[in-house]
Image (cartoon, rainbow, N blue to C red; front, side, top):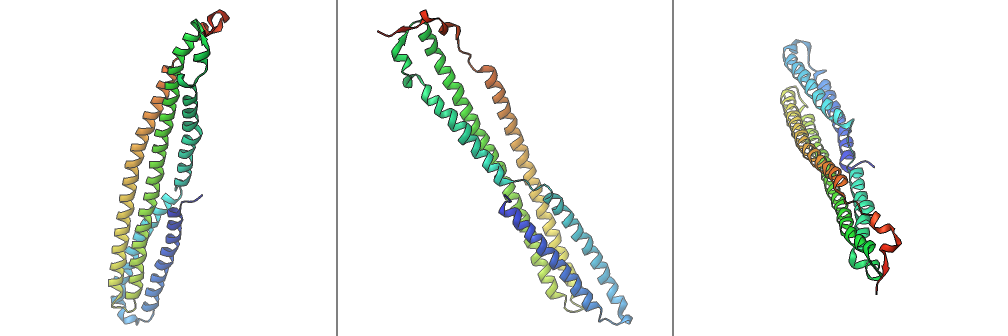
Length: 248
């Protein structure tokens, strides 16, 4: 499922492309009425239009490169919820059910096997709760990444809206030969601001992904440590029938 912000970016890109084309068409239409002997006035405008084409290309190249790999905030949030609902909550429920105060075994049996069992249970409960904690940490990390990607695309939408507004104003201003240079300057200014907004958004997202990467590495290490440290039950002391006696 496409994020609403990403869909907005696609919509605004199409709108901006149309407005840029409208601007160039408007300028060409106005210039077509200029007599040849005023070509000295037209050349600076042509130079300005070429600069604008390059700036527009720079902007679209940047945004289209990002669109190729938009990410999926929605999917990240879904996976984050699955970690809690399908892993964290499940092992948490198990931990609650096998705690010593919930087990009838501790009331019905005694002996060497029963004591070994009682000793093993708290460690197993602790291990399960650690898994639950890790699932919650992973959910937080994935949710933060999803929110960050959403914020990134919202910033790109703002950049596109800024460019569109500048283009609309330039189209209005380009109704005369005299007004065209100012219109070109205005749309170039909007393009520059928009490119700056995109660059800032990219830097912010890169900073977030570095933070998330560090979080993920920490969680992965905790999972590795949990596997090494998980208490192994002394099942040998629980196997012999003589180690279990009905409590008196």
